[in-house]
Image 1 (tube, helix red, strand yellow):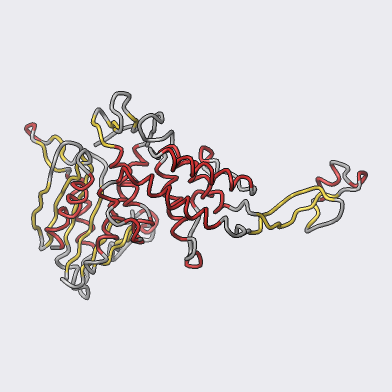
Image 2 (tube, one colour):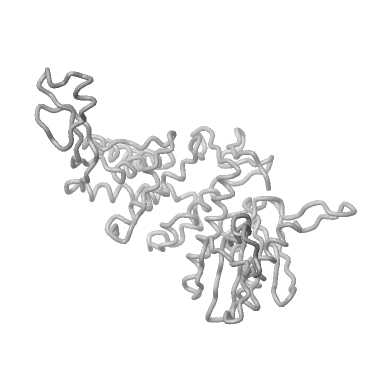
Length: 375
């Protein structure tokens, strides 16, 4: 599957088109759900939501509205923000250049820079922007109205909005262990902001929405990793994303380190209970390509790359390494592939996830894809 961009079809409500193929928007939302920290943290409120991802905006809206109402029953938690202002007395540090260039002293003023407590914090802005963002996605008019009302209340307290079009970095706030109290609402806000894709709302009647090939590739990779992190917990799996594999190079020349590419796996799954390992690599391309005699074959470059990662992780003291499996996972529309073989003691294979199917079937495909390797 390749595309220069994703767009909503003018005659296909609820669909996203890529190179003429149509994917339900609910499945794009499903990928966003799987990729989110909120889903991976496993809150009880999200049990079963993956079966009905079209309900995701409403669930997020309910969570955001309830949380905002609770927060507004007490003063918003302020934080210090760097402020610059012309004052009649010195506060903090003096901006000498502005004071002199604007001749402020002659008017009894001095330019100051200081830290000031304010409710207009990045986190409060993120929550308010999420309320504004998710409101148009809710078919329930009353819930949409409540979102907008809570946003206005925050605005009345001096909380601004993120400039999403300008790529406001505040939309990527880090959440630490000290944020246990607000963790769920902050994660819900981050997910709500992602549901409204870059160029518009991806929902019927709310204009166009575009997602570049690079963005979708990254989304699919994060969604697959997030899915196996969430589902692997109950199975005793240890799931890592972006794990590097050592080449185990010897007798290297002096300049090799500067030019040797890194081996990085998309998803690494260890099942220590059953003694199995799977190295999974996601790809954004057709799973098959034209070979000799007009025959379609698996992509040799992808297979060689996967085989290299699988063999490179072998270590004498690692009992899971000698029989580790490798899987290439491709997004697809209207086609199915699930093939594997064993070479040098390792099972390698390729599978597709058909994003034109229902969300339940997408989930089942993700589970079935790893069964030959993890059981």
